[in-house]
Amino acid sequence: MKGIKKAIPWWLKIGIKIVLARLPIYYAFWKRIGMFEHGDMNQPQRALEIFIEHARTADVIIDEGSRPQFKTQDDNYTVLELGPGDSLFTAVIAKSLGASKIWLVDAGSYATTAMQPYADLIDYLRKQSLSAALNGPPQTLMDLLKVCRAEYLTEGVRSLTNMPSNSVDYCFSNAVLEHIPKGDFVLLVKELYRVMKPDGVSSHCVDLRDHLGGSLNNLRFTEATWEGALFRKSGFYTNRIRFGEIIALFEHAGFDCQISRVVRWDALPTPRAKLDEAFRHLREDHLLISIFDLILRRKS
View 1 (tube, one colour):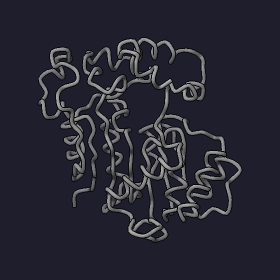
View 2 (spheres, helix red, strand yellow):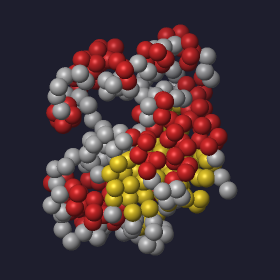
View 3 (cartoon, one colour):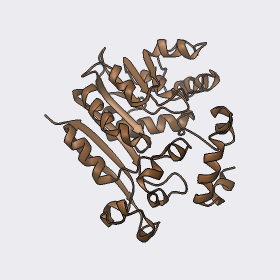
């Protein structure tokens, strides 16, 4: 299926996804055939690798021995994941590393409720000397969340407004910020600043490529077309907020921004002349950025 998807031109993918997104078929079916997916955090090894990679970049774990753990091992170390996607594996992983409270915030209830994947994760963590502090696989997802002291909030950015101020030690997201609706992004920045503890840190991998073929074809369209319901609710939406504006928004909110990694194209993958006027005159060095990793700390 992935080979077929790769061969489909970006413009045809738009048409196909617009049609498919409006069929009365559950998300689980589209995920099964690989048409719509919310990340790859449903694979035990990959989920642990992503979590450790972000935590290492944010410098919040001790990772020198055989058993990684959070540097601060107290009774009030809290973790927030933005966009857990197809699973709530982060709840189990964060618990196994010493977190006392975990929040998982998403735009919908996308996580699998089948318990076998979680049992597989727990077994995998035990083989990595991470017991996850669980006596055995819980019988239901609700039980698992309770044991991990985790909350699954599914009202998108507005879920953050229900969280206490100054409550999060560590936050991370993996290819999620670009999916936040443009109209909600300022609220996200504001609320993230509010919920982070003064000495908290967050790590975010931001993917600026279009989610149609890994280029800049999403920048071809006018604001009215791209932000309209037809495109925004069809499974390929990204907010199109570019590198410089993302940094400016976080800095304006009071964050100190550190760029820990930047991936660039050698040349623009989509001709500048094909871009909408709103993007055509942006700085080339910013347009060439395809992926970047961002570390945020509240300014003292």
